[in-house]
Image (tube, rainbow, N blue to C red; front, side, top):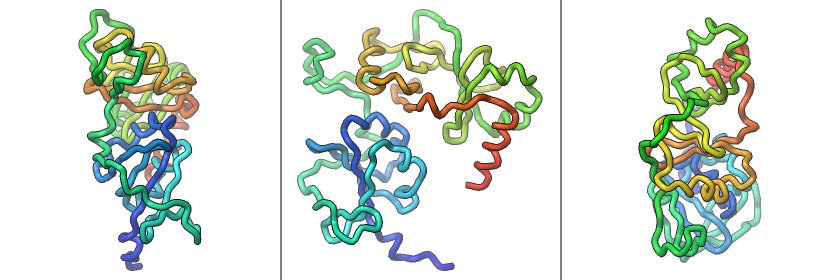
Length: 247
């Protein structure tokens, strides 16, 4: 069946409350998306049709998807518009704008009058690894050989094409390890440049402590809901693999 060209030409916008801005880490690599903010919330535009209906978008809390028609924003399948397009927004590329910075009005920094970017540095102490991130393709044939009693001590979740295992003792698979600090998962051997950042970031991005913030060395993070983890077993791994093959 031929693709409907009218579908490709549709323009989609999204709106989320400011309090849920932490969730945008899951789509920060979508380089075609533009982001802007006003007093009411965060605005996004530039989605493809596939992105507008993707699982990543559906999982963003309190996210509303609109279709732009003649300067008006319509909710899905709505006959009447919900809002007019905001004309005074300052747009920036999502992957460049979505940095972990704190404006000067953030008094948690005790009067520092400039933006502070989050940096990780080599830590002074080595802490036990509590999580492992590895390629699914590299381990899919190996995991069936692991004894059940070792698997059942771990929780796991899919992160793109990788598996994130949480718990101890970790499996001896190739991959990147992380250690726990508050509700952060930091790369082994790294820590925050400023010691007080750990608690401040939790207050800002994880107030309810219901997420793990998974960091990389560049200072960006991915929020992962703790409830999304499942117990590791050969059967759960196989079922997940089959589900991925159908996507």
